[in-house]
Image (cartoon, rainbow over all chains, first blue to last red; front, side, top):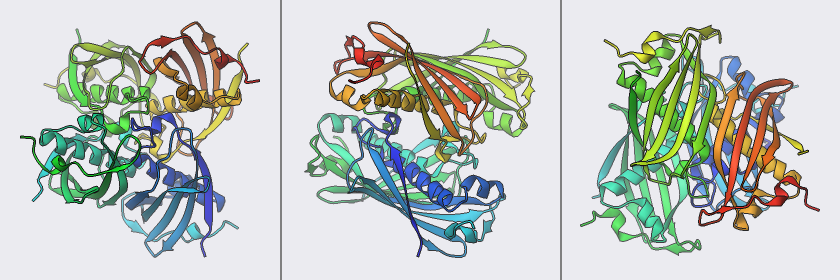
Length: 130
Length: 130
Length: 130
Length: 130
């Protein structure tokens, strides 16, 4: 099965809104950080992937919000690949404050080249660099 | 049935990413603008709603991306209330560049008071101010 | 002398922070909008400038904050070219809420090509397209 | 003399723009992180300061950009208090990629209470918690 990777992110003042909580749209940035760090933990970076001409584009993004995150909260972003097909990859993300689950997200990416043409999902995405 | 409201938004440089497109997480900000302007078109503002002690919190957000939006594109955000129940309201958003559909979003909001306690959805949300 | 251009921008919820005001870093985005619209009023767009291979990079940015802007405020961004030299252009920006001056900014841009090499400031930046 | 504090921040995809670099307005968010972590290193948090009723508002912000930061760059944010007076505090920030200086910033904050009235700068800002 696929590994789960955890990274910690602290909520910045900029990321709050006047309700005094992390703005709902900013969770997607934390998910992006989670995917980048999962890949790094396998020995790759999204930067090299992109430099090699393979771009990952988000085709679907969703998030369910259970409890608000606050300024300066130290959050854990859990990221797991939930599915890989020929042309797409799906991630599940959980946002926790200690044991407390604050939000759950699902992101689907497709792969394209610089001309926007669909590519096969690189096989290494679910493997470790040897 | 519920009205559909349209507002135009131009993509800012800040909102692009290095892929040369509108960052996927920024569509949620445009949806927020769409909801605010739908409400204004009915004679209300979200600011007064909040000042009256009723806060709208996003409990679910999703977006499907069909085609990328680019810097300086003048986009049309179409916003419709798709469902109102006692405690929640659901919106459908479409992002268009002229006739071309770029993205579709669904946002569910719940209403809480300043203490975070669930409130009834204000009735006027689906009506015009007389 | 150089013309002053005005554009209106409404503060989005996303752009507020938990102090209940427009986050200080977000004024720079409004200044960017002001520069883009000043150029458009002269018959050009920054998009075509960039497509022609001339990139405007910010080399200095500053802002003085006099009074806070709030959510849903309709702000006027006044933009004036304050200086053009061979390689740089300087803008002055004022942010007003009706007559009230909220902030003043100064932005200096340099011009580079795609390889990052300094270019002459395009002459048309201070002129109207005929 | 005042201490200098260093914190590392990695550039997120969201924070880049279509020029392929960190958007100029986003440096101010990194400066904010620098100030928060300097305070934490002294044994305080900005969150408790604010909860005690003292708000730090930015009255002047400036940044000089020397070289662009790129996606996934691991940056060092150096933060030093450069001046404290009765009502204001000034910070100097440097952004480095390894030894390379990318940007320099100066931020001036004033202190207000919840009603917006000017307060004395809390003395502990330049001291360590015992």
